[in-house]
Image (cartoon, rainbow, N blue to C red; front, side):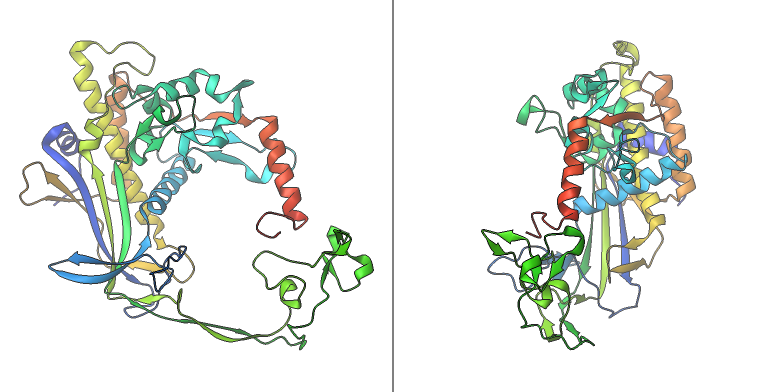
Amino acid sequence: MGPITLDILKAAVAGGAVAIRAVTRLEPAGGPGDKVFPPTYVKDGRAETKYAMERRHIDGRVVDTVLLDSVASQANRFEEALLEAWRRRELDFPVVQVDFSQEPGLEDLEQITALQAPHRIADAILRDSVLDGKPFRFTPIGQAFTDARPNHATGMHKHCPTALIFGVWDSTGPKGGLGAKFQRCVVSEIVGIDVVAGVKTASRIDPLGIERKVGGVFAHRDPAQEWTVDAAEARLEKNEPAPFSRKGAGDKGTPAAINHGNIPPSIEAEAGGVTMSHAVQTTVISLAGLRRLRFSTTVDGEPLPAGSRDAAERAARTALAALALAAVAYQRENGYDLRSRSLLVAREPLMFEILGRDGGEPQKYWLERDDARRLLADAQAEQNALGLGWSREPVTLRPAPKLAELVRRSRTLKQAGTDEEGA
């Protein structure tokens, strides 16, 4: 075993393999038997918990499992790891971002990139922004990604290669459902194995002794005061004092709505955490998916010469595979702190297996962060020489005035306590 080299990766991407996978055993940071808390979902009528519990065939037996981190969540963690490395200038690849730092009242948003936007380069945040005064869709960059498709992927490869590995569907663009659609070539999830659902307790003793049943808590007409018990000071709704409410608090118009009063001891069984024998992160990079991508032009828009097109396409696919491997290696450096009370630790080193087309024993390799950085740099150098290179300087958009104003109005509503969820 050794590190994945550029020659090894090139051979695999060229057709020698169908996929690269990494399977890592994890356990709770508190040790075996410690409770962890999976993500919660809306509970349907048949489910006993709010967790994604299911039975799976593993190692020849049927076991109870729970989803600890979904495919979409894992993709976000990989993208976050890539973005951090890009900002530290350890990795070079194209980034499109929207800069809010010059917008009055929105400076704290700083820059939102296609690696952070839910729909990547096709997200509404980018769609409703401008470049040199033009709506993004009507710029050469916006048009290039709008027109991209798997058999003509240069436009997406040039401006947002991460969308080619994590997937994107431009379903709200000018082409509607026929908009640019690229499948995920990196799929990963974390699953708890041999799980048993538990319970969670809650209680609170109010040192002031305020009774939760006391009513008469009204929304103050002055938003800065929030609430009042004097009906004369209350904001009116239909000529009546409006009961106060706050998102996540108790019943409207009661001390619970302003976080006062006792909470009697209770037991929560629908989202009480789980114990398990261990967890497994399974990551698969589809080389077959990357081979579906075709590149008919250089990044400068010139047709690729027939004699060098195959080599250029292989180089671009290899660079994308190296970028995907870097995402996995850098995410491993970030660890597995999935959410509150769901901190996992790896029980083995990160190993990659290259899966041949005809089965057989997988070839095993390791790849640490610095190895991944060098691999990506080497792969980039080859694609650059063949006309499909990347620029690391970001494309920076500004939010359209209407988008900035929409964000400001939303913030005003939240500050006044009248957002949709708190209403």
